[in-house]
Image: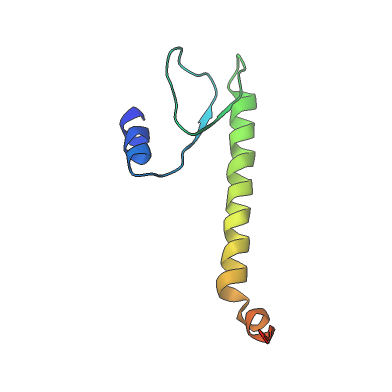
Length: 78
């Protein structure tokens, strides 16, 4: 995962890292969402919820930019 994050940072991409148990001394670039728990279940649940929220945002953007063309055409810029 280290080389991928380094390449993303070099190219100017923003990184969001989901961690259950971070490695001591490892510096992660960008936003780190850490769920420090002894078991993996709470971290897994939080990650699943974040992925679902991300997919929901993507669907809304897709719908309003590409599928809801009638609403875009109904707006009169003048």
